[in-house]
Image 1 (cartoon, rainbow, N blue to C red):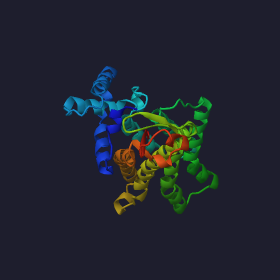
Image 2: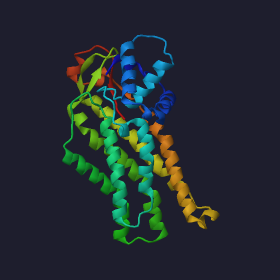
Image 3: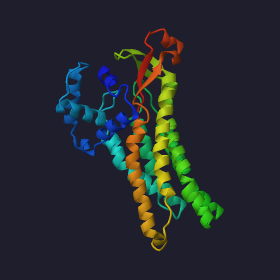
Image 4: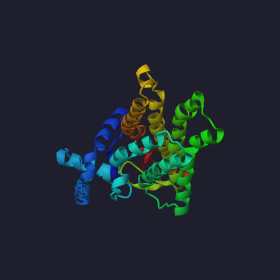
Length: 308
């Protein structure tokens, strides 16, 4: 975690972080080659923490690196797991799970790629300061568990034989927002719990490593889980609040299309909001750290990479 990265987003308000992410999530950054990304990274490393006036080239390099490079490891992220790709790929995946499903199998089939991609993005953009990894069997089991939870409302309707309008309203409109909020947060917890076990690296304002903190890891995981819950909870809440107009009652397909479009637009608007709810450069007070770490520094506040 470099000092230059620590300087970014420091003491920014929510609105400033939102404007920043709105810029970083530019889909055009996905077209950049690996060589362009490496050149941008080298340029920023050569500047270091020097307080030089930023020209357009430096600002573009910062934008490209934040959209493509992991702040801990310094490695270029896989293109599908970069933040701008999450904006483009996550929307159709979550909307596909909201389509009314005639069978439990179809609900499961649509949930599986959504939960797999969401888990992969969480892993790729988590804290990498400590060597943590999951067993492939655990990852498969966690994704299948989340998939089954996502398909549970359809299973319940089929098993209970619910056909009434009130029943469909409960399972189709009222249940999805809290369920998807739970799934979003639970996915983060399942994918990132090794960070809590091993701790995440905390540094001072100059970028000097103080040590690995489990309490900082807990704070990072909690904030990321809350931001993901907000993303999926609001995305599913907006279409569930839409009501049939007399005209739409005569054209249910149009109403269904409008609900799906509303979910797409809401997801697109909520991604930068979700990323901005908490600073990516997390901070924790020295008094809240473990005793062994308090002895290693006198600074009042330490920093870590929260992840996305």
